[in-house]
Image 1: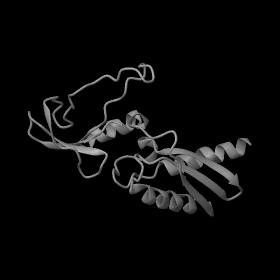
Image 2: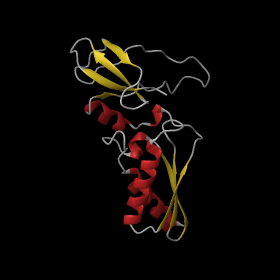
Image 3: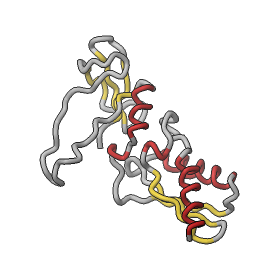
Image 4: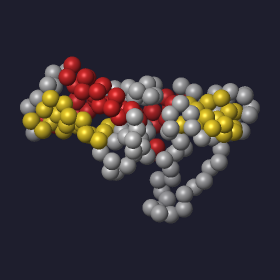
Length: 168
């Protein structure tokens, strides 16, 4: 049992190290879409993935990349299953993932207030910080950018356009 747990941890680390196909600056673990890895029999593994939104076209590429990485590490039978519950949210992005997004020039999503009661008021912040100069004087150019989960904004201060990962 201990050996199986260690194997699952190692396989989770390997699967989690796969870059996101749409945001290759992030790994699947940093994005928070990798829900788990289970050894179901010797040489047989099930990986659970949650898409960032239902119908996300990148889920197929993620699955293929995970299968390839695990096959390359000696796992002959890999099954990647899509898990829709609990739904993914931008709170699932790790602190390291948020840091990498900002460093890459994408304004990370604002974290949700973890102390607010479920179904309670949602804090509203209208400003989005420019990842280039740090100004909060930004404007929305388009609700959609290179992917459906990002919006296109421009900083009024430095005039640079940038993507903003939308809060979900």
